[in-house]
Length: 115
Picture 1 (cartoon, one colour):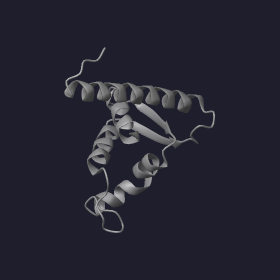
Picture 2 (cartoon, helix red, strand yellow):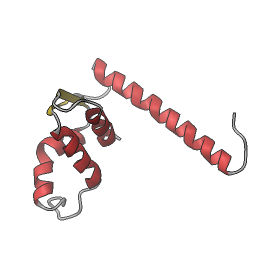
Picture 3 (cartoon, rainbow, N blue to C red):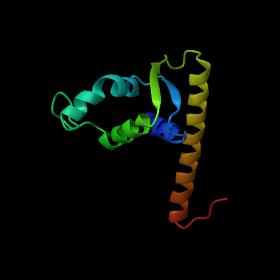
Picture 4 (cartoon, rainbow, N blue to C red):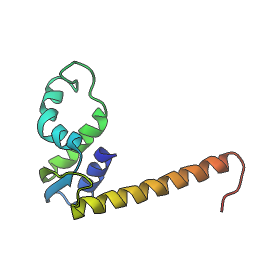
């Protein structure tokens, strides 16, 4: 989810933006600032030679970030950072909406009507 959010956020901007990506995902931060060069050099394989999980999303994030000047910053999650708390609230609400839509689709597929 964090990868997709970062991709969508960067793709929503006009190319050439100066962006500070603030997030609580060390996975995204370290992926973009530490691990990516090694993965690419090894043909999208980790140091243990296993394939990088979500390589398609990492490639999309790399392409999106390349359109801008991006600084990657980590913040501790659920620790009172106003922007991080707002992002978490938005993500949680959107996840609830998506789950509700999915449940309606399942019910409709069984031939029942939903309101």
